[in-house]
Length: 492
Ligand code: CFM
Image 1 (cartoon, rainbow, N blue to C red):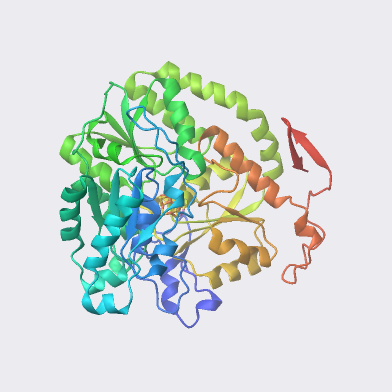
Image 2: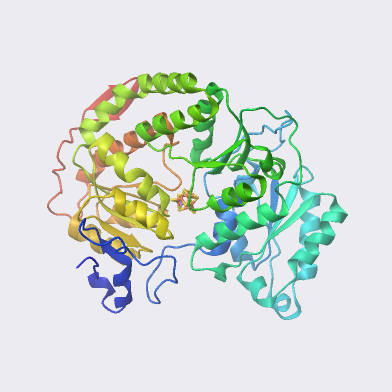
């Protein structure tokens, strides 16, 4: 029986197809149903297509002002709550005057009932003009359709076209209303196509070199991009265009000048890498920089491509020297701990093997809010016999899993975190991170540290959890002393 129906799903048996237990002898086609509408009655944790466009793809840009064409709620939730910091550095050497501009401001049209009845285009036009006046430093204005404006059918492109000419800067419409697809994944897709069709190839970079790469699908969560950039820089490779972490509008417009593209998030951004390959003949490589082994392996591949093998080896050796001994400590402490990975998708397959192989952790469940079949193939290939693979999980399922199975830690997001805490199980945010970055050599060490300090936090034995009588007061290995590792104090 490769599929599992949770007790909490008795009323919605359709959920069974989405929860697969891996058995090595199962045929290849055995995997969770995915990328379809959420089963009615299931309390999904998914985001909407608009969230996928603004919250993931475009919100990381440092010099763009965003106008959300919606009642005020969508605008509120489009605020910069995701942790993708930006530096002020611009490709021409100048500085953008507002630090972390992308995290600070969002504009909206604040639609009310009369706009729904009579149309919102006038308001949209005025809001874009106001945004341009309020933020003259912004180099472009991106405007977003939402469920309301998608339904009333405002012709946003007509407004944008007019205003691009009037304002003398790009006004780009992202037509990904919330209902455009089953999850945020559809918004990634639409935003990739919009950017490609509307922007790529419309500007030229100030300079080019033979070692210019495009880094695609890297959003600089908690500084991830800067870690990778430092490795590439030491190898003599320049990132000419970032899609879209710490990027500016202009560099998106000259993505067609990269010599090679690296695709980091292969769920949200392979679309544009494919489009660029097709039109401009620029090759791309899928990369995986989570963990020391994958990171080394991928830096070697990039080194080989550019004939920079020795430099790649130097970066790897330097970083391993720094993180190797400390990782050893965490490996010892994390050995045998039972962990779930609940992510949007890719992080569930990126991390499954590294956690097991490099830290000795047992990954007993993985879940994804919006992966497609190709991602589930990777997930299935990378987990052990008996691991539960859940598509579009609902909170009650997770509660049932935690209650019955008592993992030592769940790697998840803010939606799961406090429920896990209430059940007496530590939870670490794998979406926006806690003490990130989590990518690369140093990042993997940060992740290990955070996992360790969450599992071994003495709070879990100070509180009494009704659900968890077995563990009260006796989590194995916890003492109250503090140990110092390389100058950092950690609870032992
Ligand atoms: Fe790509 Fe991402 Fe992810 Fe994603 Fe996301 Fe994210 Fe994620 Mo949260 S772009 S698919 S839509 S790697 S926000 S940085 S962590 S669900 S696994």
